[in-house]
Each structure stands twice: as C-alpha cells, then as structure tokens.
Length: 584
Image (cartoon, rainbow, N blue to C red; front, side, top):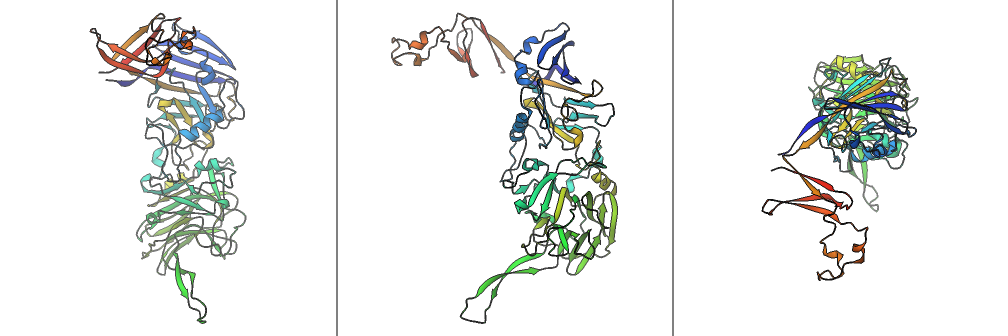
C-alpha cells in the first residue's frame, strides 16, 4: 500500500531587509541556512548537514532563490526575481481560479473543497515541490506578518481545505449564510476595469444558490474601486457604477417573500450629484415589479385598414418588495424608501436625507411587524405595520438597479453599488453593526475570514483578499520590500509531504551496458535483421533512450514492467541508477 505523511522537512522563511532575506530549513534536527543578496546566491552556515545536492545552483533561475515571492501589483521586477510576477498572476488567474463561463459552470482544477477567487491585488509564494517534498501538507501553513505599529500584523493559517484564514476574525459575528439568498460583490470584475466593448453579460452570485444574474445595457455599467476603509478614503475591492443599466435575477421565484416572512437587504451605495434618469420621481435599487406586457388588438374604425397588435403595459398591485431612491424631482428628495405592498395594503418606511458622493451602508429589512432602514450601522427609520399584507407574491422578475421596463418608463438607478446581500431572515442589530464595519484591521463588511488559498499539490500559497491590509503580503506596504529594516517583516512555516512505498528497487545501468537499441527503425531494411544500420546510428553522438524497465525473478520470469513518464537518455560516460517504487 502507499500512503502520504508529512516528512521531517519544515521550511521557515523570514524577511530581513530590502533585497536580503533568510531561509532556514530544519531537517533531522539540524540547521542549514543560506542567504541571498540581490542576484548572488551563497551559503551562510552549515550545521553538519549538506543539502546542497537538493538545491542545484540553476534552481534559483526558475524558483527565485528557492522560493518565488511575487505580487500582481509590482511596479518592477527585482533582481532576485527572475520571473515576471504579472505572468505568474496571469497564470493563476486563468488556470487556478474559478470563474463562471457562459453556461455558468465553474472550471476548477484544484484538488480540494476550495473557495477560490482572485482579486485585483494578489501576492504569490511558490515553492518548488520537486525540491522540498511532493507538495504542501494540509493544515501546515502558517504565515505571520508583523510591524512596529501593529496595524499590519496578522496571522494566517491553512484550514486544510485549501483556504488561508486570518485568525483575528470572530466568525460568530458573521451573518449566518444558511439564509443567504444572493451575494454579489463584483470583486471578480477587476478584469473588466476600463473595458467598454468586451464586458461579460453577467455578474457572479457567490451565494450557495448561484443565481443567474444577467446585465442589461452593458455599455452603461462601469467597474470602479469599491467601498472604502472605515474613516478613510482607501478603496477595497470593486464596485459597479450604474448609469442606465440594470441586473436581472433569473431565479426570481426564490425572492417571493410571504406576508409573514422576514427578509433583509444589505448593500453599499454611493450617490452621484444627480440621477441621469428622472422620468419619474424615484429610481429603483431593488424591484420585483408587477408590470407585465400584454397584447391587445387595436380595432380601427376604418375597415379598409388592417387590424394591428400593440404592446400595452398593465399594472398589478402586488410587490413583494421595492427599494428606491427619491431623486431631486421628488417631494422628499435624497431619501431611501423601502416598501412592501399587495392589493391596496402598503407598508412603507423612508430614511432620513442622505449625503452624496460618499459611501453609505444600508440594511432594509422586515422583522416581525416592523419595517426598518438602517444607515451606516444605526437604525435610521422604522414603521410598525400591525396587520399582515396578503397576496404579495408575483411571478415577475427581480431587478437590481432598475425596474426592467422600456426606455421611456425606466427609472434605473445612477450610482455605485457594492457588497449586495439578500437574506431570507432579519439580521440581528449587533450583526448589522459588523456588516457596516470595514475597518483596516478586522473589517467584517466582506463577511469572511478567508484571505487566500493554498494549492497543496502545486506548492503555491496565495493571498488575494481585496482589503488593503493584505495588499502585497510578504512584500511590504508598496510591494517594494519596504519593511523599515528588521523591525517589520513576515515569517512563514509549512510541512511538505512524501509518499512511502512498500517496495523500492534500484536498477543500476552501468556505463558500458545498453548502449545500443533493439528498435528495428535503426536498420536500413526494417524487415531484414541482417541488413546494415542507418548511418546516424554509428555516430559517436548516438545515444539510445530508455522507455521501459522489466523486473524479473530468480527464474528470469518477467514479473513487472515499469514505464517511464519520459524517455531517459542512456549515458555511456557514467553509471545510471533508476529507482522503481511499487506496492503489492
């Protein structure tokens, strides 16, 4: 049988100062250490063990001095970093991270139950697994970032499922995801910054329901920096700037909230100076509207003219919900309204006046008989509706950023939207406060402690959270190794894995053996064994290749055949050893 264990090899790496870092390996309780300085590569200390055979000098050309540390936000390539970091980032983006295709099926090549996405800023650490074991052992990665001020300190651990998590987060403060119906954060849209004509016609719903959310009027949407750090102007992630476009949620039946059902909308928004569309006094942010298109015959009195079919929009009265902004033409301008209605019954609550050109967080929710609007973590308005509203459900689509009507009747919202979450339950007051918290140290607005991924089989550790605290992890605040001497820096640890086999046989091929081939293609006449050899075979530069090794018992019976993954050139100047491992 075969099995994997964590072998005795640990790796510890520590940033020291600009252009100089130390890597320490601990093997069999013996310390070996080397240093790099710019492009030079030399040993610093050796305590009784020689690992040089595992670190061939040419490896640093490909692995960046054993470990490649890079960032998507590099402004230049360091002398100690021979691979362009943006190439590594591009490779990650296209090969290791999930992204919806047109059929909405993620393409995943990772080997665990891993939650993956790549943000605009991403720091990457690659470890040559063929040098340090076969891969990274699960739950073995620990990363420590520290600084004199403490503002950039964090401890990241590997959860065993391929996710790096920040231990500073108290996950009991997150809203329970079992009631999450939709989550659109736009962070995957960093790929479409500045793109006008090749935007994808959908956004990613990261909830467990994976709703189809399609975009209409693609050219009227722009992706911009997202919500800012609390009390600061530093942006985090990506937001969507709407200017006449809207989203259509195809799975609309999931959003028919009953008359006795609690529900909540949590979202961030930024209002511009003026709404582009003011055909009416309101601009919808969320709407499951009751407008249907019906056809009627236009009967002309003049019988010589043909009958014609015209579109007519018919209004019904049942709204499971609508949330809209009252624009400058409204009697109550610059306020949010949250409403639920059905057959003449209306429950409605309106916020206080909102400032423009600044980010606000809103929660609009129904909890029991109360309809509430929370603004920036504080209860802003509340309305108690003692009776229940009947016949609220409808079969119409759910729209975000508009009402989905024709151009003349469209009341699409103008402004930025970000971190949209919809729940099938009310949100407790203390957790609304945390939804509003986007502080630098432990911002809970993103509702996750996961800040990156570990790809065990590929030897890759990635920190890709959009929050600025993790920007250019391992590289300093600007990605330029600005650690202010030895006071600031990072440490990291991991264990590697190796496979132990039940049987291991060393096949020795001496330099004077097997220097010819039995392949008939080397003869001028492939069917005549006595014919002459091709001229190239007699050259002194001709070396055959080994593709198969046979294992025989004492009776010279063939008992096993080992196929090499790649042909191995037979050398006639040195002996060669081939290790065959197998289980029975």
